[in-house]
Amino acid sequence: MTNQRKPRGPYRKSAERRERILQAAYEAIDEFGEKASLQDIADRVGVTQPALTYYFPTRDELLLSVLERRDMVGKAASVDAVAEANSSVAGTATTARHIIDHPGLAKLYVTLTAAATDPDSPAHSYFENRYRTLAAEITEDMVDQQRAGVIRADQPAAHLARAVLAILDGLQLQWMHDPTVDIVAIAETFTRMLAPSSDVKQEEETTD
Image 1: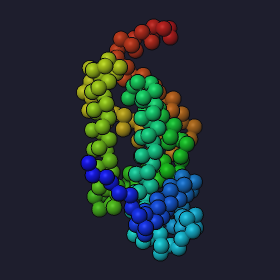
Image 2 (image 1 turned 90 degrees about the vertical axis):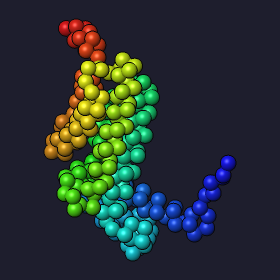
Image 3 (image 1 turned 60 degrees about the vertical axis):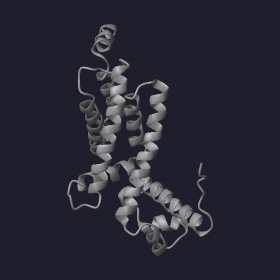
Image 4 (image 1 turned 120 degrees about the vertical axis):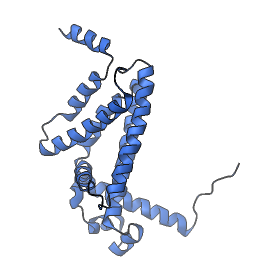
């Protein structure tokens, strides 16, 4: 078995500085949205702008790296929620909570998503791959949950997966326009709609 060696010397320092810059950008954009300046990010790390661009040559590359970090943090929270509730759909409401807890990042996501519909956008490939990967992962989870009888099995798992993504993106956009929209409650309503028809009927009877 081959032992993986950790970067040492200047390589490790370089990786650590890149991580510090990325985390600073994540925090700055979380606070100020896309308006966060490169100078602000550089100041948070204690480096010059030229030093910052050494690690992230373009602003677009830095913003996309921040979105990747956002996805990673949100996915970790969602996985924990799924494990606790033993249901993949439980992660939908958790993701909605993550959105409202980080409005600056949500605004960046909405802005870049719209711009990325242009094939010439630097973000086009990122979002194309993101949606394809997420759809595949959620579909796999949906299939498992359908087999376990947790969610309805009368609709294609792939369609339900795309519906989850559409709900989250749509709620995110609506919340940007009107912060009074309770996207967490709506996400929870949607997850209840995914329950097997017998469970939905029983819940309605109990409510009545």
